Image: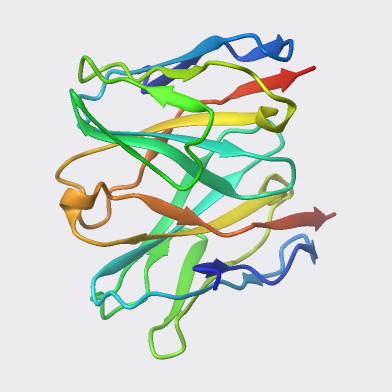
Amino acid sequence: AQKITQTQPGMFVQEKEAVTLDCTYDTSDQSYGLFWYKQPSSGEMIFLIYQGSYDEQNATEGRYSLNFQKARKSANLVISASQLGDSAMYFCAMREGPRAAGNKLTFGGGTRVLVKP
Amino acid sequence: NAGVTQTPKFRILKIGQSMTLQCTQDMNHNYMYWYRQDPGMGLKLIYYSVGAGITDKGEVPNGYNVSRSTTEDFPLRLELAAPSQTSVYFCASSDVRAYSNQPQHFGDGTRLSIL
């Protein structure tokens, strides 16, 4: 089974509107972390936001927020007030296991977002 | 503020050739990683290291080798290049204290083509 699933291969969003990117995960660990990264066409990986499994509040970072539903094992990224510069690939990733195991990340397949003016 | 530096940025190899992808970080991070990203896909872990002298396999280690002689450097070696190794390779590092919200920091990637 896939550990991280991103079911939307591509999406269009109108400038200034909000967009939600889906991410579901599979783990038996109680302690884990979920990360979202942005990859623009230039190729670099940019960290956006983090949610820990024990965090009671949904994470927010500027225009990015995370809709964390632990029972459903989902961690959807919400981008508010989309800008043209938000056009990129977005990856959800999960860290499982104890710190000594290396803090390794497992990535989903990504969602491509194209913001229309 | 260099962060994670990868060299080269681009390389074309012939089948059977070997090469080393260089990665260095200046953040004193103990943990380092190598990922590969095939076109249109997510990243897959090749090897990782939790400190100098310690390396371990990730999800897709076949055809690669690594070493970690210093905290700063984590080179990735391809011994006999194969077309299946055509990919973009990313090196990353993270803080050993990072059990909570510290992300992995990525280099800009090396685009490698095997012809």
